[in-house]
Image (cartoon, rainbow, N blue to C red; front, side, top):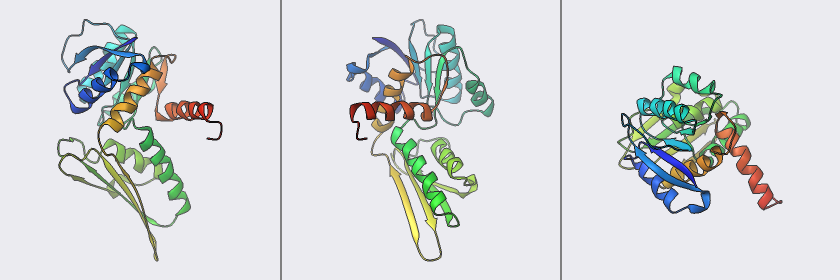
Length: 229
């Protein structure tokens, strides 16, 4: 079993990830330590999963390099300098995505195609998250906007209750309106995907990985299981 340190373990995502690892032994992972930003971590790990704060993410990255462990960072609102630093990593397997859901990644590809098909339509992106979310617009909304070439000022947002994440693209033409929506029903969508990515990442060579890399692997695996896919 590969050992995992969960960074940001007291958060909702951290707790969900710990629960899913415990109930998914087929993935070959086990929790070695639960960590928060500023904690000392004497335990060794094969992979570190981070959903914390920008400072916590930097600590997770440094700890992973120190232990020569793989590292998955799902924390959003990271400084641009840190993002560039991660992209240059070549000593450990490092994965970063502002949204680790494979479903959301495919939704982004769907929006990209829609924006091409409905070129000339006015586009607006709206996102809804829980009231505890600190960044606005969300990292996911910013990434979706980047994919379709939408300026960030065209992103609107709401913070309501415990909504785990909803993203809506509206394309408006002179005679019709197209609405594409992705709604996460609970955090397990993201936590389960993070665990699956970590199980894949720990077996990858050193380098920087994104959702595009994992999606290619997931699609290839699907085709092996079902040649008709």
